[in-house]
Length: 363
Image 1: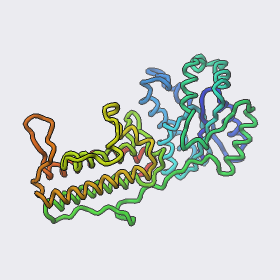
Image 2: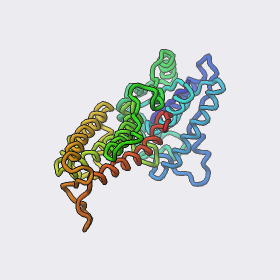
Image 3: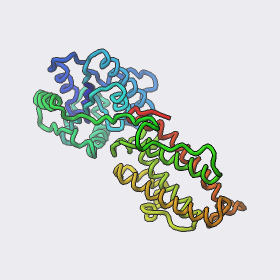
Image 4: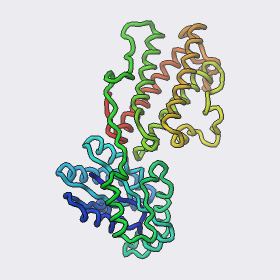
């Protein structure tokens, strides 16, 4: 089993991790993230500062690699360090790939006690009050991961270790590790390949449906936390891609093609305040809500495509025109090809994001 013991400076994680590694009957390795960060001699950036994203991602990969090597050798691993939820995807991917049990425990004393403990440390960098406050705030509200937290205010490290050992032995603090998505064609919800010989409209719609289902497949079976997890340095998330493509569907087939309004929730968004609202707001939506938003937009688009084909075929043009001088309206043919391009591009992003989240791959 791999146990990640984390929290802000002063939470007691290093002492507790050492006790957990000793007080067990299984061969166990105690890794600390500090060793990996200190190995970066030239070009080191404190991991809580802006500009450290690439370094932190590389260090996380190195830590996962070390933990994997020990686990393959038959050792349990207790890892201590500041490992926020944003660092979990590579651990989860490895757990899915290697068959680990993965536990995540956040020690979280109150702010006053955290400051008192941390500023009394010998390491000058971790005595900086602003840095400690920032790292404490990063663990203040963990959403779906709140059950993985333990308040260690006033608690002796030995008592914390004993309580955690009993809880871990009972199966507490485990992170769900989704089974990788099946290969296309192996499940009841498999994608349907576009027809090899059909008229132009049927072929275009076949490819559009194929890519819609690819996005659904690439985002299936994930938790809300996984859907809102980026893969640094990119800020893209799988949930953001789902909501973005739902918006793009409605923008092109409802607003541009038919001159109507975009479907909810996009019709009430404050786009002036946040032009990328659909990407940013997706983290607040459940997996079920994101799927519903996409399905509603797709169903509305299909009705509008049917109407446009009946009215003017692929050569029929949009009510609204291009904003670029002299271009005029869009043909339905152009909009369908553009939507296929839009999905294909973002499904490539989804491939990479899904593999980073839980290790699932496939064409």
